[in-house]
Image (tube, rainbow, N blue to C red; front, side, top):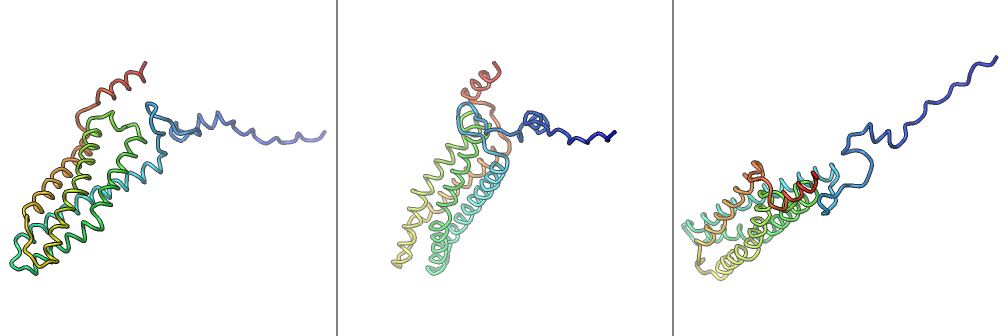
Length: 204
C-alpha cells in the first residue's frame, strides 16, 4: 500500500482573519462617526497628532519670542536697538507666525473630524476650536498690522508709535495659548448637547 499523501493545512478564511485581528486592525473601510468624516487610520492619526503638537508648541514659543522683542523694543535705550528688535519681530511675523497658526488650526480640525472626539461633541474641543480660530484671525490681521506699522516707522527713521500694542497683543495671545494647552491636557467640561444626543443614539 502506498503511504497516504500529506495534505497542506487549510488556509484560514477572511472571516477567521477578522476574528484573529484586533477590531481596529481588521480589514474593512474606515468607519464614520455620526455621519461625519471617515475615521483616520492609526498611522495617519499619530503622524497628524505629532504635527499638531509640534506646531502648537511652536506657535506658543513664537508668541513668547514676539513678546520678548516687543518689550525689548519698548525699553531700548537707542533707536538702533529698538530698530533691531522690531526687525527681528518682522521676520518672525513674515515667515513663521501666519503659517504656523494656520497649520495648527488646520491640523486640529482634521484631527477632530477624523477621530471620535469630533468638532462639536466635547466642550473642550469646541472651545479650543473657536479660540484658535479667533487668535489665528487676530494674528493675521491685528498683530501683523501692528508689526508692519512698527517696521514702517523703523525704515522711515521715526520713533515707533504704539509700542504698548506690541506688548499687549502677544501677552493676550500667550495667555490664550497657555489656556488652550491646559484644556488639551485636562480635557474638562464633558459632552456638548450634540455629543449627548449622538451618544444616546449610538446606545439605542
